[in-house]
Length: 116
Image (cartoon, rainbow, N blue to C red; front, top):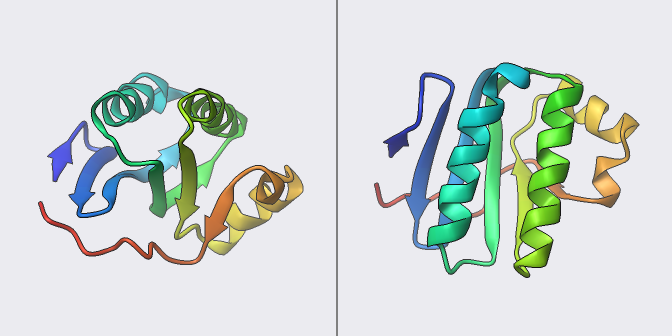
């Protein structure tokens, strides 16, 4: 596990990297979230980057924007973003924003086995 700060950490598995977001996913996380995602994108040959929101309590419009920017960047690299483990109220926000049409959103991380 690589700790970026108290709200973001990265875990590795045989299938690639997962960015874990804790607490309030908002504009205050922008720099650290983006740095973590770019680090993974630049150093990973995997085609899927996972964003695990199991510890996220809140997302705001800037968080949605960060996910969209990440998606755009990954598409240019022929990579995908998978959003996993969102709480119900966050899933409802994603549904309202039609994120289910843009992202792979699932209940659990099927790549869960980690090799820290």
